[in-house]
Length: 542
View 1 (cartoon, rainbow, N blue to C red):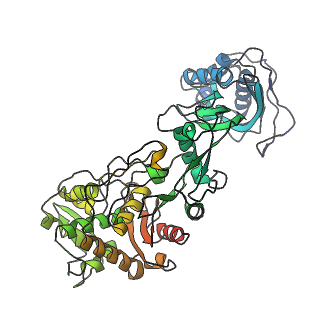
View 2 (cartoon, rainbow, N blue to C red; view 1 turned 180 degrees about the vertical axis):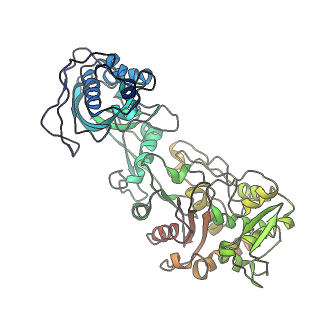
View 3 (cartoon, rainbow, N blue to C red; view 1 turned 60 degrees about the horizontal axis):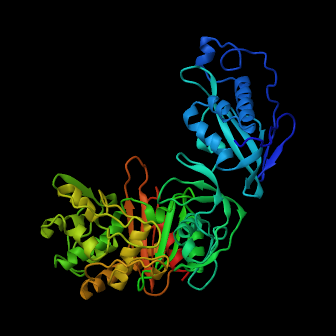
Protein backbone atom coordinates (compact mmCIF):
# COMPACT_ATOMS: atom_id res chain seq x y z
CA UNK A 1 0.00 0.00 0.00
CA UNK A 2 1.12 3.59 -0.60
CA UNK A 3 2.17 5.44 2.52
CA UNK A 4 -0.21 8.14 3.67
CA UNK A 5 -3.33 6.46 2.29
CA UNK A 6 -6.44 6.91 4.39
CA UNK A 7 -7.71 3.55 5.59
CA UNK A 8 -10.53 2.32 7.74
CA UNK A 9 -12.43 -0.82 8.64
CA UNK A 10 -16.11 -0.33 9.32
CA UNK A 11 -17.95 -2.75 11.60
CA UNK A 12 -20.63 -2.82 14.28
CA UNK A 13 -24.30 -2.17 13.75
CA UNK A 14 -25.08 -0.85 10.27
CA UNK A 15 -25.55 -2.35 6.80
CA UNK A 16 -23.46 -1.64 3.74
CA UNK A 17 -24.89 -1.33 0.24
CA UNK A 18 -22.20 -1.73 -2.42
CA UNK A 19 -22.84 -2.37 -6.10
CA UNK A 20 -26.51 -2.97 -5.38
CA UNK A 21 -26.05 -5.74 -2.77
CA UNK A 22 -26.95 -5.35 0.89
CA UNK A 23 -25.03 -7.00 3.70
CA UNK A 24 -26.24 -7.14 7.28
CA UNK A 25 -23.27 -6.04 9.37
CA UNK A 26 -22.18 -7.82 12.53
CA UNK A 27 -20.20 -6.96 15.65
CA UNK A 28 -16.56 -7.85 15.26
CA UNK A 29 -14.54 -9.10 18.23
CA UNK A 30 -12.86 -6.01 19.63
CA UNK A 31 -11.25 -7.17 22.88
CA UNK A 32 -7.75 -8.58 22.69
CA UNK A 33 -7.56 -10.54 25.91
CA UNK A 34 -6.60 -13.84 24.32
CA UNK A 35 -3.03 -14.89 23.77
CA UNK A 36 -1.55 -17.67 21.68
CA UNK A 37 -0.15 -17.66 18.19
CA UNK A 38 -3.48 -17.04 16.45
CA UNK A 39 -4.74 -14.21 18.64
CA UNK A 40 -7.74 -16.27 19.76
CA UNK A 41 -6.39 -17.91 22.86
CA UNK A 42 -4.74 -21.23 23.53
CA UNK A 43 -6.52 -23.99 21.64
CA UNK A 44 -6.85 -27.61 22.63
CA UNK A 45 -5.70 -30.35 20.24
CA UNK A 46 -9.30 -31.09 19.24
CA UNK A 47 -10.02 -27.40 18.64
CA UNK A 48 -6.92 -27.09 16.45
CA UNK A 49 -8.08 -29.94 14.23
CA UNK A 50 -11.78 -29.10 13.98
CA UNK A 51 -13.48 -26.43 11.88
CA UNK A 52 -13.03 -22.83 13.05
CA UNK A 53 -15.57 -21.59 15.54
CA UNK A 54 -17.88 -18.62 14.98
CA UNK A 55 -15.68 -16.54 17.29
CA UNK A 56 -12.55 -17.51 15.37
CA UNK A 57 -14.18 -16.69 12.03
CA UNK A 58 -15.21 -13.22 13.22
CA UNK A 59 -11.87 -12.48 14.86
CA UNK A 60 -9.81 -13.69 11.90
CA UNK A 61 -11.93 -11.75 9.39
CA UNK A 62 -11.67 -8.61 11.55
CA UNK A 63 -7.91 -8.86 11.91
CA UNK A 64 -7.31 -9.59 8.21
CA UNK A 65 -9.57 -6.80 6.97
CA UNK A 66 -8.07 -4.32 9.44
CA UNK A 67 -4.52 -5.13 8.28
CA UNK A 68 -5.52 -4.86 4.62
CA UNK A 69 -7.35 -1.56 5.21
CA UNK A 70 -4.39 0.08 6.95
CA UNK A 71 -2.05 -1.02 4.17
CA UNK A 72 -0.13 -3.62 6.18
CA UNK A 73 0.26 -6.26 3.44
CA UNK A 74 2.74 -8.26 5.50
CA UNK A 75 0.39 -8.66 8.46
CA UNK A 76 -2.63 -9.37 6.24
CA UNK A 77 -0.73 -11.99 4.24
CA UNK A 78 0.39 -13.73 7.42
CA UNK A 79 -3.27 -14.17 8.31
CA UNK A 80 -3.84 -16.28 5.18
CA UNK A 81 -3.00 -19.88 4.37
CA UNK A 82 -0.83 -18.81 1.41
CA UNK A 83 1.22 -15.80 2.44
CA UNK A 84 3.61 -16.20 -0.51
CA UNK A 85 0.81 -15.47 -3.00
CA UNK A 86 -1.20 -13.11 -0.84
CA UNK A 87 1.68 -10.77 0.02
CA UNK A 88 2.49 -9.43 -3.50
CA UNK A 89 -1.21 -9.21 -4.36
CA UNK A 90 -2.00 -7.16 -1.26
CA UNK A 91 1.09 -5.01 -1.77
CA UNK A 92 0.19 -4.37 -5.39
CA UNK A 93 -3.32 -3.29 -4.40
CA UNK A 94 -1.82 0.03 -3.32
CA UNK A 95 1.45 0.27 -5.23
CA UNK A 96 0.39 -1.03 -8.65
CA UNK A 97 -3.38 -0.65 -8.68
CA UNK A 98 -3.05 2.71 -6.85
CA UNK A 99 -6.08 2.03 -4.68
CA UNK A 100 -6.24 4.06 -1.45
CA UNK A 101 -8.65 5.46 1.14
CA UNK A 102 -9.77 1.88 1.65
CA UNK A 103 -12.84 1.15 3.76
CA UNK A 104 -13.84 -2.48 4.33
CA UNK A 105 -17.27 -3.27 5.76
CA UNK A 106 -17.86 -6.88 6.85
CA UNK A 107 -21.27 -8.48 6.51
CA UNK A 108 -22.97 -11.29 8.37
CA UNK A 109 -21.03 -14.58 8.16
CA UNK A 110 -22.62 -17.57 6.48
CA UNK A 111 -20.82 -20.50 8.01
CA UNK A 112 -17.11 -19.96 7.39
CA UNK A 113 -17.74 -17.39 4.63
CA UNK A 114 -17.67 -13.69 5.44
CA UNK A 115 -18.92 -11.20 2.83
CA UNK A 116 -17.61 -7.65 2.88
CA UNK A 117 -17.99 -4.42 0.98
CA UNK A 118 -15.09 -2.37 -0.36
CA UNK A 119 -15.15 1.39 -0.75
CA UNK A 120 -11.95 3.07 -1.98
CA UNK A 121 -10.45 5.66 -4.33
CA UNK A 122 -8.26 4.93 -7.35
CA UNK A 123 -5.73 7.71 -8.01
CA UNK A 124 -3.19 8.04 -10.80
CA UNK A 125 -1.22 11.08 -11.98
CA UNK A 126 -3.66 13.63 -10.67
CA UNK A 127 -6.78 11.71 -11.71
CA UNK A 128 -8.97 9.88 -9.22
CA UNK A 129 -12.27 8.05 -9.11
CA UNK A 130 -14.22 6.18 -6.41
CA UNK A 131 -14.27 2.39 -6.49
CA UNK A 132 -16.88 0.20 -4.82
CA UNK A 133 -17.50 -3.54 -5.00
CA UNK A 134 -18.36 -6.60 -2.91
CA UNK A 135 -16.21 -9.60 -2.15
CA UNK A 136 -15.95 -12.36 0.43
CA UNK A 137 -13.44 -14.46 2.33
CA UNK A 138 -13.53 -17.90 3.87
CA UNK A 139 -11.85 -18.83 7.14
CA UNK A 140 -10.24 -22.27 7.38
CA UNK A 141 -8.10 -24.15 9.86
CA UNK A 142 -4.38 -24.06 9.04
CA UNK A 143 -3.16 -27.54 8.16
CA UNK A 144 0.11 -27.36 10.11
CA UNK A 145 -0.44 -24.72 12.81
CA UNK A 146 -4.13 -25.23 13.50
CA UNK A 147 -4.61 -21.45 13.35
CA UNK A 148 -7.80 -19.99 11.85
CA UNK A 149 -6.67 -18.39 8.58
CA UNK A 150 -8.18 -16.71 5.55
CA UNK A 151 -8.26 -19.15 2.65
CA UNK A 152 -6.33 -17.10 0.11
CA UNK A 153 -7.89 -16.82 -3.32
CA UNK A 154 -7.29 -13.95 -5.76
CA UNK A 155 -11.04 -13.27 -5.67
CA UNK A 156 -10.73 -12.12 -2.05
CA UNK A 157 -8.95 -9.00 -3.31
CA UNK A 158 -11.45 -8.47 -6.13
CA UNK A 159 -14.09 -10.93 -7.41
CA UNK A 160 -12.88 -10.47 -11.00
CA UNK A 161 -9.42 -11.80 -10.19
CA UNK A 162 -8.33 -15.33 -11.00
CA UNK A 163 -5.12 -17.20 -10.32
CA UNK A 164 -2.17 -15.59 -12.13
CA UNK A 165 -4.00 -12.28 -12.63
CA UNK A 166 -3.29 -8.92 -11.01
CA UNK A 167 -4.64 -5.37 -10.74
CA UNK A 168 -2.98 -2.40 -12.42
CA UNK A 169 -3.85 1.26 -12.87
CA UNK A 170 -2.21 3.32 -15.61
CA UNK A 171 -2.47 4.39 -19.20
CA UNK A 172 -4.42 1.73 -21.08
CA UNK A 173 -2.38 -0.59 -23.28
CA UNK A 174 -4.77 0.14 -26.16
CA UNK A 175 -7.21 2.96 -26.95
CA UNK A 176 -10.92 2.24 -26.56
CA UNK A 177 -12.89 1.19 -29.63
CA UNK A 178 -16.37 1.73 -30.94
CA UNK A 179 -17.05 -1.61 -32.60
CA UNK A 180 -19.76 -1.49 -35.26
CA UNK A 181 -21.53 -4.19 -37.23
CA UNK A 182 -21.55 -4.46 -41.01
CA UNK A 183 -24.27 -1.77 -41.20
CA UNK A 184 -22.54 0.67 -38.84
CA UNK A 185 -24.61 -0.17 -35.75
CA UNK A 186 -22.61 0.02 -32.51
CA UNK A 187 -21.94 -3.24 -30.67
CA UNK A 188 -21.58 -3.00 -26.89
CA UNK A 189 -21.15 -5.66 -24.23
CA UNK A 190 -24.13 -4.17 -22.36
CA UNK A 191 -26.46 -4.90 -25.28
CA UNK A 192 -24.67 -8.04 -26.48
CA UNK A 193 -23.12 -9.66 -23.35
CA UNK A 194 -21.44 -12.50 -25.27
CA UNK A 195 -19.31 -9.96 -27.08
CA UNK A 196 -17.66 -8.78 -23.84
CA UNK A 197 -14.44 -10.84 -24.08
CA UNK A 198 -14.44 -10.52 -27.88
CA UNK A 199 -14.62 -6.72 -27.74
CA UNK A 200 -11.80 -6.72 -25.19
CA UNK A 201 -9.63 -8.77 -27.54
CA UNK A 202 -10.55 -6.63 -30.54
CA UNK A 203 -9.55 -3.55 -28.58
CA UNK A 204 -6.24 -5.11 -27.58
CA UNK A 205 -5.48 -6.11 -31.18
CA UNK A 206 -6.88 -3.19 -33.13
CA UNK A 207 -7.33 -0.25 -30.75
CA UNK A 208 -4.18 1.46 -32.02
CA UNK A 209 -5.28 0.88 -35.63
CA UNK A 210 -8.76 2.35 -35.13
CA UNK A 211 -7.49 5.89 -34.48
CA UNK A 212 -8.48 6.31 -30.83
CA UNK A 213 -6.62 7.77 -27.84
CA UNK A 214 -5.86 5.70 -24.73
CA UNK A 215 -7.28 6.68 -21.35
CA UNK A 216 -6.32 5.82 -17.76
CA UNK A 217 -7.86 2.66 -16.35
CA UNK A 218 -7.88 0.15 -13.53
CA UNK A 219 -7.59 -3.22 -15.24
CA UNK A 220 -7.25 -6.91 -14.51
CA UNK A 221 -4.01 -8.03 -16.14
CA UNK A 222 -4.42 -11.58 -17.36
CA UNK A 223 -0.73 -12.32 -17.73
CA UNK A 224 -1.49 -14.39 -20.85
CA UNK A 225 -0.69 -13.43 -24.42
CA UNK A 226 -4.04 -14.63 -25.78
CA UNK A 227 -6.16 -13.11 -22.99
CA UNK A 228 -6.54 -9.31 -23.05
CA UNK A 229 -6.70 -7.06 -19.99
CA UNK A 230 -10.18 -6.45 -18.58
CA UNK A 231 -11.19 -2.92 -17.65
CA UNK A 232 -12.71 -2.51 -14.18
CA UNK A 233 -12.78 1.29 -13.92
CA UNK A 234 -11.96 4.11 -16.33
CA UNK A 235 -10.46 7.18 -14.66
CA UNK A 236 -10.47 8.82 -18.08
CA UNK A 237 -12.09 7.10 -21.03
CA UNK A 238 -9.84 8.35 -23.77
CA UNK A 239 -11.20 8.71 -27.28
CA UNK A 240 -12.57 5.59 -29.03
CA UNK A 241 -11.76 4.80 -32.63
CA UNK A 242 -14.35 3.13 -34.83
CA UNK A 243 -13.67 -0.52 -35.59
CA UNK A 244 -15.66 -2.27 -38.33
CA UNK A 245 -16.64 -5.93 -37.87
CA UNK A 246 -18.44 -8.48 -40.04
CA UNK A 247 -21.09 -9.08 -37.37
CA UNK A 248 -24.77 -8.40 -37.99
CA UNK A 249 -26.56 -6.79 -35.03
CA UNK A 250 -29.87 -8.55 -35.75
CA UNK A 251 -28.29 -11.99 -36.07
CA UNK A 252 -26.13 -11.32 -32.99
CA UNK A 253 -29.21 -10.36 -30.99
CA UNK A 254 -30.89 -13.63 -32.00
CA UNK A 255 -27.76 -15.58 -31.03
CA UNK A 256 -27.60 -13.87 -27.63
CA UNK A 257 -31.23 -14.76 -26.96
CA UNK A 258 -30.77 -18.31 -28.22
CA UNK A 259 -27.90 -19.30 -25.93
CA UNK A 260 -29.77 -18.07 -22.87
CA UNK A 261 -32.04 -21.13 -23.18
CA UNK A 262 -29.25 -23.44 -21.99
CA UNK A 263 -26.22 -23.13 -19.79
CA UNK A 264 -22.88 -24.07 -21.32
CA UNK A 265 -23.99 -23.39 -24.88
CA UNK A 266 -22.34 -21.70 -27.87
CA UNK A 267 -23.46 -20.70 -31.36
CA UNK A 268 -21.77 -19.18 -34.43
CA UNK A 269 -23.27 -17.94 -37.71
CA UNK A 270 -21.26 -17.49 -40.94
CA UNK A 271 -22.09 -16.26 -44.43
CA UNK A 272 -21.06 -19.17 -46.74
CA UNK A 273 -20.34 -17.01 -49.78
CA UNK A 274 -17.81 -14.81 -47.95
CA UNK A 275 -16.79 -16.48 -44.67
CA UNK A 276 -17.96 -13.38 -42.77
CA UNK A 277 -18.92 -14.18 -39.17
CA UNK A 278 -22.39 -12.76 -38.58
CA UNK A 279 -22.81 -13.76 -34.93
CA UNK A 280 -20.99 -15.46 -32.06
CA UNK A 281 -22.55 -16.06 -28.66
CA UNK A 282 -21.82 -18.07 -25.52
CA UNK A 283 -23.69 -18.79 -22.31
CA UNK A 284 -20.71 -19.83 -20.22
CA UNK A 285 -18.59 -18.06 -17.60
CA UNK A 286 -18.53 -14.75 -19.46
CA UNK A 287 -14.77 -14.74 -20.05
CA UNK A 288 -14.11 -17.61 -22.43
CA UNK A 289 -15.15 -17.56 -26.06
CA UNK A 290 -15.85 -21.28 -26.27
CA UNK A 291 -17.60 -20.79 -29.62
CA UNK A 292 -14.18 -19.98 -31.15
CA UNK A 293 -11.80 -21.70 -28.74
CA UNK A 294 -13.62 -24.85 -27.59
CA UNK A 295 -12.28 -28.33 -28.30
CA UNK A 296 -14.89 -31.08 -28.25
CA UNK A 297 -15.90 -34.11 -30.28
CA UNK A 298 -18.72 -32.93 -32.60
CA UNK A 299 -20.57 -36.23 -32.98
CA UNK A 300 -22.50 -36.94 -36.16
CA UNK A 301 -22.25 -33.37 -37.49
CA UNK A 302 -18.81 -34.59 -38.63
CA UNK A 303 -20.60 -36.91 -41.09
CA UNK A 304 -20.79 -33.92 -43.46
CA UNK A 305 -17.02 -34.14 -44.00
CA UNK A 306 -17.02 -37.96 -43.85
CA UNK A 307 -19.72 -38.14 -46.53
CA UNK A 308 -17.78 -35.78 -48.76
CA UNK A 309 -14.69 -38.00 -48.43
CA UNK A 310 -16.60 -41.22 -49.17
CA UNK A 311 -18.28 -39.69 -52.21
CA UNK A 312 -15.04 -38.21 -53.53
CA UNK A 313 -13.52 -41.69 -53.37
CA UNK A 314 -16.46 -43.09 -55.33
CA UNK A 315 -17.37 -45.47 -52.52
CA UNK A 316 -20.94 -44.21 -52.27
CA UNK A 317 -23.37 -41.67 -53.63
CA UNK A 318 -26.57 -40.24 -52.24
CA UNK A 319 -28.82 -42.68 -54.05
CA UNK A 320 -26.83 -45.89 -53.57
CA UNK A 321 -28.22 -48.53 -51.22
CA UNK A 322 -26.05 -49.10 -48.16
CA UNK A 323 -26.18 -51.39 -45.13
CA UNK A 324 -27.35 -49.95 -41.82
CA UNK A 325 -27.30 -52.78 -39.24
CA UNK A 326 -27.87 -52.15 -35.55
CA UNK A 327 -24.14 -52.48 -34.84
CA UNK A 328 -20.84 -52.79 -36.66
CA UNK A 329 -17.38 -53.97 -35.53
CA UNK A 330 -14.10 -52.54 -36.76
CA UNK A 331 -10.76 -53.82 -35.36
CA UNK A 332 -12.46 -55.12 -32.24
CA UNK A 333 -14.39 -51.91 -31.53
CA UNK A 334 -18.19 -52.10 -31.68
CA UNK A 335 -20.31 -49.17 -32.85
CA UNK A 336 -24.08 -48.87 -32.37
CA UNK A 337 -26.91 -46.78 -33.69
CA UNK A 338 -29.12 -44.83 -31.32
CA UNK A 339 -31.51 -47.34 -29.69
CA UNK A 340 -29.97 -49.98 -32.00
CA UNK A 341 -32.20 -49.00 -34.95
CA UNK A 342 -31.66 -50.50 -38.41
CA UNK A 343 -32.47 -49.37 -41.95
CA UNK A 344 -32.97 -52.01 -44.62
CA UNK A 345 -32.65 -51.53 -48.37
CA UNK A 346 -32.47 -47.73 -48.26
CA UNK A 347 -30.10 -45.16 -49.75
CA UNK A 348 -27.02 -43.55 -48.26
CA UNK A 349 -29.00 -40.28 -48.17
CA UNK A 350 -31.51 -41.97 -45.87
CA UNK A 351 -28.75 -43.22 -43.57
CA UNK A 352 -27.30 -39.68 -43.48
CA UNK A 353 -30.69 -38.13 -42.76
CA UNK A 354 -31.42 -40.56 -39.93
CA UNK A 355 -27.81 -40.47 -38.69
CA UNK A 356 -27.00 -44.15 -39.04
CA UNK A 357 -23.54 -44.69 -37.51
CA UNK A 358 -23.04 -48.20 -38.79
CA UNK A 359 -23.56 -47.26 -42.44
CA UNK A 360 -20.44 -45.13 -42.19
CA UNK A 361 -18.41 -47.68 -40.21
CA UNK A 362 -19.22 -50.43 -42.77
CA UNK A 363 -17.54 -48.33 -45.50
CA UNK A 364 -14.19 -47.90 -43.74
CA UNK A 365 -12.54 -51.01 -45.17
CA UNK A 366 -13.36 -49.82 -48.68
CA UNK A 367 -11.57 -46.51 -48.08
CA UNK A 368 -8.28 -48.41 -47.55
CA UNK A 369 -6.73 -45.29 -45.99
CA UNK A 370 -6.94 -44.44 -42.30
CA UNK A 371 -5.74 -40.90 -43.12
CA UNK A 372 -8.48 -40.26 -45.70
CA UNK A 373 -10.74 -38.28 -43.36
CA UNK A 374 -7.94 -36.09 -41.90
CA UNK A 375 -6.85 -35.27 -45.48
CA UNK A 376 -10.40 -34.38 -46.52
CA UNK A 377 -10.92 -32.19 -43.46
CA UNK A 378 -7.73 -30.26 -44.13
CA UNK A 379 -7.61 -30.11 -47.92
CA UNK A 380 -11.29 -29.34 -48.56
CA UNK A 381 -12.76 -27.93 -45.34
CA UNK A 382 -9.68 -26.00 -44.14
CA UNK A 383 -9.59 -27.68 -40.73
CA UNK A 384 -6.32 -27.03 -38.87
CA UNK A 385 -4.94 -24.46 -41.32
CA UNK A 386 -4.26 -21.73 -38.70
CA UNK A 387 -7.13 -19.45 -39.55
CA UNK A 388 -6.68 -15.68 -39.31
CA UNK A 389 -10.15 -14.76 -38.10
CA UNK A 390 -9.09 -11.54 -36.35
CA UNK A 391 -9.36 -12.99 -32.84
CA UNK A 392 -8.03 -16.10 -31.11
CA UNK A 393 -9.55 -19.29 -32.51
CA UNK A 394 -9.01 -23.03 -32.46
CA UNK A 395 -9.36 -24.18 -36.04
CA UNK A 396 -10.32 -27.80 -35.54
CA UNK A 397 -8.30 -31.00 -35.45
CA UNK A 398 -8.69 -34.40 -37.11
CA UNK A 399 -5.40 -36.17 -36.30
CA UNK A 400 -4.30 -39.26 -38.20
CA UNK A 401 -5.34 -42.40 -36.33
CA UNK A 402 -5.54 -46.12 -37.03
CA UNK A 403 -7.98 -48.99 -36.54
CA UNK A 404 -10.82 -48.38 -34.06
CA UNK A 405 -9.80 -44.80 -33.33
CA UNK A 406 -9.86 -43.96 -37.03
CA UNK A 407 -13.34 -45.49 -37.26
CA UNK A 408 -14.58 -43.35 -34.37
CA UNK A 409 -13.56 -40.24 -36.30
CA UNK A 410 -15.98 -41.14 -39.11
CA UNK A 411 -18.88 -40.40 -36.78
CA UNK A 412 -17.28 -37.45 -34.99
CA UNK A 413 -16.07 -39.28 -31.89
CA UNK A 414 -12.61 -40.20 -30.62
CA UNK A 415 -9.87 -37.66 -31.20
CA UNK A 416 -11.80 -35.29 -33.49
CA UNK A 417 -11.88 -31.83 -31.88
CA UNK A 418 -14.20 -29.04 -33.05
CA UNK A 419 -16.15 -26.02 -31.85
CA UNK A 420 -19.20 -24.13 -33.09
CA UNK A 421 -17.04 -21.97 -35.38
CA UNK A 422 -15.47 -25.02 -37.04
CA UNK A 423 -18.79 -26.77 -37.61
CA UNK A 424 -20.45 -23.61 -38.94
CA UNK A 425 -17.53 -23.32 -41.36
CA UNK A 426 -17.82 -26.97 -42.46
CA UNK A 427 -21.51 -26.37 -43.18
CA UNK A 428 -20.71 -23.13 -44.99
CA UNK A 429 -18.19 -25.01 -47.16
CA UNK A 430 -20.78 -27.67 -47.98
CA UNK A 431 -23.26 -24.94 -48.95
CA UNK A 432 -20.77 -22.86 -50.97
CA UNK A 433 -18.64 -25.70 -52.36
CA UNK A 434 -15.42 -23.88 -51.44
CA UNK A 435 -13.90 -23.14 -48.04
CA UNK A 436 -14.00 -19.44 -47.15
CA UNK A 437 -11.92 -18.83 -44.04
CA UNK A 438 -14.11 -17.21 -41.37
CA UNK A 439 -13.30 -13.59 -40.48
CA UNK A 440 -14.74 -11.27 -37.84
CA UNK A 441 -12.90 -8.07 -38.83
CA UNK A 442 -11.77 -6.98 -42.31
CA UNK A 443 -8.47 -8.45 -43.44
CA UNK A 444 -7.03 -5.10 -44.47
CA UNK A 445 -7.10 -3.80 -40.89
CA UNK A 446 -3.80 -5.50 -40.21
CA UNK A 447 -2.81 -7.06 -43.53
CA UNK A 448 -3.88 -10.58 -42.58
CA UNK A 449 -3.92 -13.09 -45.42
CA UNK A 450 -6.99 -15.27 -45.82
CA UNK A 451 -6.14 -18.97 -45.50
CA UNK A 452 -7.31 -21.07 -48.43
CA UNK A 453 -7.93 -24.81 -48.70
CA UNK A 454 -6.08 -26.92 -51.26
CA UNK A 455 -9.18 -27.61 -53.34
CA UNK A 456 -12.94 -27.15 -53.62
CA UNK A 457 -15.54 -29.89 -53.42
CA UNK A 458 -16.26 -31.45 -56.83
CA UNK A 459 -19.56 -30.06 -58.11
CA UNK A 460 -21.37 -33.40 -58.05
CA UNK A 461 -20.23 -34.11 -54.48
CA UNK A 462 -21.20 -30.67 -53.24
CA UNK A 463 -24.61 -31.02 -54.87
CA UNK A 464 -25.29 -34.42 -53.30
CA UNK A 465 -24.08 -33.21 -49.90
CA UNK A 466 -26.48 -30.28 -49.96
CA UNK A 467 -29.35 -32.52 -51.04
CA UNK A 468 -28.65 -34.91 -48.14
CA UNK A 469 -28.61 -32.01 -45.71
CA UNK A 470 -31.88 -30.72 -47.17
CA UNK A 471 -33.40 -34.15 -46.67
CA UNK A 472 -32.20 -34.20 -43.06
CA UNK A 473 -33.81 -30.80 -42.47
CA UNK A 474 -37.16 -31.80 -43.93
CA UNK A 475 -37.67 -35.47 -43.08
CA UNK A 476 -34.65 -36.58 -41.02
CA UNK A 477 -33.37 -36.01 -37.50
CA UNK A 478 -33.27 -32.21 -37.95
CA UNK A 479 -36.83 -31.84 -39.27
CA UNK A 480 -38.47 -30.83 -36.00
CA UNK A 481 -35.93 -28.11 -35.22
CA UNK A 482 -35.86 -26.74 -38.78
CA UNK A 483 -39.62 -26.78 -39.34
CA UNK A 484 -39.96 -23.02 -38.86
CA UNK A 485 -36.93 -22.14 -41.00
CA UNK A 486 -37.78 -20.99 -44.51
CA UNK A 487 -35.86 -20.74 -47.75
CA UNK A 488 -33.28 -23.20 -49.05
CA UNK A 489 -32.41 -25.10 -45.90
CA UNK A 490 -30.31 -28.07 -44.80
CA UNK A 491 -28.97 -29.45 -41.53
CA UNK A 492 -27.19 -32.21 -39.62
CA UNK A 493 -27.60 -33.31 -36.02
CA UNK A 494 -25.01 -34.77 -33.69
CA UNK A 495 -24.60 -36.19 -30.21
CA UNK A 496 -21.17 -36.63 -28.69
CA UNK A 497 -20.51 -38.79 -25.66
CA UNK A 498 -18.15 -37.20 -23.15
CA UNK A 499 -16.41 -39.26 -20.48
CA UNK A 500 -17.95 -38.73 -17.08
CA UNK A 501 -21.12 -37.06 -18.33
CA UNK A 502 -24.43 -38.88 -17.99
CA UNK A 503 -25.87 -36.99 -20.97
CA UNK A 504 -24.18 -36.47 -24.32
CA UNK A 505 -23.34 -33.06 -25.76
CA UNK A 506 -25.92 -31.78 -28.23
CA UNK A 507 -24.62 -30.56 -31.64
CA UNK A 508 -26.54 -29.11 -34.55
CA UNK A 509 -25.48 -27.35 -37.73
CA UNK A 510 -27.51 -26.05 -40.63
CA UNK A 511 -27.89 -23.52 -43.42
CA UNK A 512 -30.68 -21.33 -44.75
CA UNK A 513 -29.98 -19.47 -47.99
CA UNK A 514 -26.65 -17.63 -47.47
CA UNK A 515 -26.30 -18.17 -43.74
CA UNK A 516 -24.82 -21.19 -41.95
CA UNK A 517 -24.87 -21.73 -38.19
CA UNK A 518 -23.74 -24.32 -35.67
CA UNK A 519 -24.36 -24.76 -31.96
CA UNK A 520 -23.25 -27.00 -29.13
CA UNK A 521 -24.94 -27.46 -25.76
CA UNK A 522 -22.85 -29.35 -23.20
CA UNK A 523 -24.84 -32.26 -21.74
CA UNK A 524 -27.78 -31.22 -23.91
CA UNK A 525 -28.68 -34.70 -25.16
CA UNK A 526 -29.54 -35.40 -28.79
CA UNK A 527 -28.61 -32.79 -31.39
CA UNK A 528 -32.12 -31.81 -32.39
CA UNK A 529 -33.32 -31.45 -28.80
CA UNK A 530 -31.18 -28.61 -27.44
CA UNK A 531 -28.74 -27.29 -30.05
CA UNK A 532 -31.27 -27.53 -32.89
CA UNK A 533 -33.65 -24.77 -31.73
CA UNK A 534 -30.65 -22.48 -31.11
CA UNK A 535 -29.47 -22.81 -34.70
CA UNK A 536 -32.99 -22.49 -36.10
CA UNK A 537 -33.64 -19.22 -34.26
CA UNK A 538 -30.36 -17.75 -35.52
CA UNK A 539 -31.06 -18.81 -39.11
CA UNK A 540 -34.50 -17.20 -38.88
CA UNK A 541 -32.95 -13.87 -37.87
CA UNK A 542 -31.26 -13.22 -41.20
